[in-house]
Image (cartoon, rainbow, N blue to C red; front, side, top):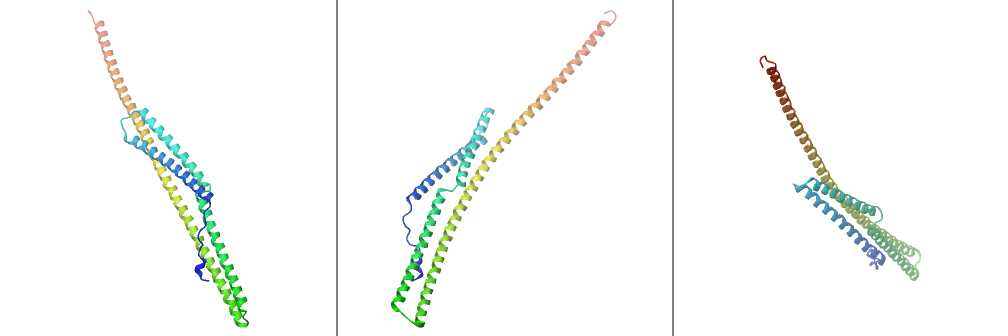
Length: 250
């Protein structure tokens, strides 16, 4: 029997439960991704408005900053929910794992049947020919060699299948890690923008308060100086008035 006979048999029908579970998982994942994307877009829009629109009052600024904080908190909660889902066994990944495992089991069973059929074939040939002496030995060795080749080919095919499954799992894991990294970077950028804007607002309010304090100090100093000048002039006037009243013949 040739080595090509050791290839995988055509796949049998998939389990209906696994297919249904996979479909539900894909739908749930899509909805969660849509919710997260919607929150991210809304947060970006509010930040863009906050950064570009000018001439708004303090109350409007505080209202928008509060909305940005609420959106950021909602986004964080959504990420935590998806994070918990990732920590558990992903139904989609579980379905892929079960599918691959069943395929490897079918491949192993197929190889077992092929080897069993080859053993039965060799036994029939030996029973029919009934050789003796060296010819019998050669016949046994030939049968054993054929079985050994089949077993080696079976192990090679199963190892290749396991390697393909491992590679697929690695690619899924790598893709998921890339998505998590991209999402984390996006969230960090949004968070940094909000923090920078809050810092800018705080610095602006601090400068405004300092400018008002300096202006008040300058104004009070000027008023104090004016009062001092007025007081000096009044004292002089009173002194002159006293001198006039106390002068002889007045």
